[in-house]
Image (tube, rainbow, N blue to C red):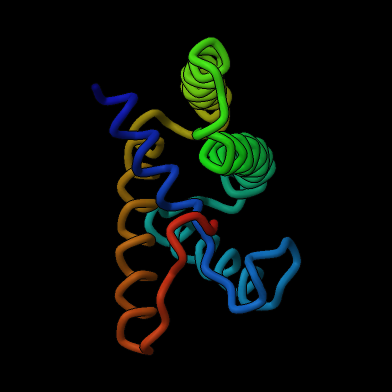
Length: 156
């Protein structure tokens, strides 16, 4: 249950709202990423040594997670667009692919939790999950206050 909760938090915390369509390298997306780095660094009270070791691992993890989520969104869109004409066998295959995709995310999270434990204390990993959640809430609040709406399938 905690793994699923973490994945939900992590998934939501990695969503990025962007007026330019959420494309990698967009100014808004990069600003959000920079704000997330500052927010998490402060919340975890990372030492310079910890930060130097933490961010490459964390960035690699979030990049891989974003790629899995993009594939999952693309697969869902394709499935939804074709659902009316698919056979039961094809739908069953798509549902199995969805479960496989979710399992890949869980496996990725487990692998990176082990990797993160090599570079920061386990308590800071727990603090990371809370910091990611708090960042998401803060970002959504800022967007609401500025009148922006986040598309449900975009990353931040």
